[in-house]
Amino acid sequence: MMSSALVLSSHAAPVAKPNILILYADDMGYGDLGANNPASKIPTPHLDRLAGEGMRFTDGHSSSGICTPSRYAMLTGRHHWRDFHDIAQAFGGTVFKPGQLTMPAMLRQQGYETACIGKWHLGMDWEAIRKPGTPKNSIEFSDFDWTKKFPGGPIDHGFDYYFGDNVINFPPYAWIENDRLPIAPDITLKKTPGSTKEGQWECRPGPGRSDWDFYKVLPTLTEKGVAYIQSRKGKDRPFFLYFPLPSPHAPIVPTAEFDGKSKAGAYGDYVVQTDDSCGKLLTALRESGFDANTIVVFSSDNGPENYAYARDEKFDHWSAAPFRGLKRDIYEGGHHVPFIIKWPGVAKAGTVSEALISQVDLMATFAAQAGVALPANAAEDSYNFLPWLTGEEKKSPRSTMIHNTNPKDYAIRDGDWLLIDAKTGAARVAGAAWNKKHQQPADDGQAVELYNLKEDIGQRHNLAEKNPDKIIQMQDLMKKIRTQGHSAPRLDKK
Image (cartoon, rainbow, N blue to C red):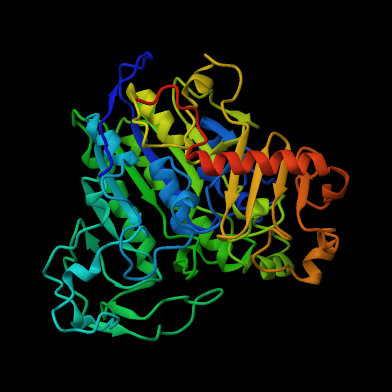
């Protein structure tokens, strides 16, 4: 059992405890956000306003190029690759270790009300409610006793409240509240009706509601998020709301009112709806009087899905602009994501930062704000950005970061240099048309790839052959970080 005990920090911390809202998009590219990309064909006025009110990071990263690992890393301050690489599969169990300290658990110990509304995708113990005698791999709706509570979900990992559907394209296709399904599935969904507005359904078969409507998922979650914020008005305790959106991940299902709102097809329209959803929660903060005392973070779990290639060809909109690569890749486009922090009185409004930052750094930063020191077996890769955000420290705390999606392939960032310790950083090879349009040369056949991102953010020019010593240095650094069990300083750990 891992210890989750926290102790008071020797560092002074702000007296008032701000509320915290994390808006976490799914498969949204860096170049989809208007504030990041003036050439974007997608209007994002609410998130652009958030960027103007906070600090926009141009060098912000998720831990992985896919869903579950990035979420795990952000909520634990520990890089996913120390523990696993793949997503939590449909009906898969929790990815957290017993007793592992999570961000919501840490904040709850400091007096916060904690809630998760939206996509979980970190596993739940569905086997606990399987009826005796049913085959273990069977996924018929009648195989489960839906009247029972299931363990291993959000409320067992630090959240006081959860509402969502776990994953929009995974069963059960029904609403989950806390640790049960208020209305039980009554069918086994094996084929989705009709067609999506772009791409594929990507839905796994399994239990669901006969009246389930995928188009209502984002609107319903948004209503719940707004209602939660409004319900905190007049309460004494601060709140932490983690709002992981199901969008713009497939199935791409923008509601009719958003059709044609972008110039980037249905996906672009879905991003507009995602922006609108975030805007509704931000409006609720303002109207409830929380705006001046709430930290708001916006980011995405990874880069855009491979439908981006067709979108670029048809609409001249590159979702990962200005980067090379997409979801699953260890090229920048796989994990270099939108990243905004609005922190009234701390992060200077309207600023743009080039500091290297990861979502794993939120854990230590929030811990410092709450005035606690993390135990040695928690947040092993999380850097405390609070002194840097307040201006107490002028130098950014982070200069190095390891990127990974596939178990065999790693990359390491060190300053301006990026080493892909593999023959390629792509999980799927880009087509000739994309390479030609974006002036991407053919693969040179070298065993590794080395880039200077300050000079070549598009990763077009492999400098490996000219810098053998740099490669060795970075490989040694990566080996050290991977084997020592942590990458963040341990000075404040007890």
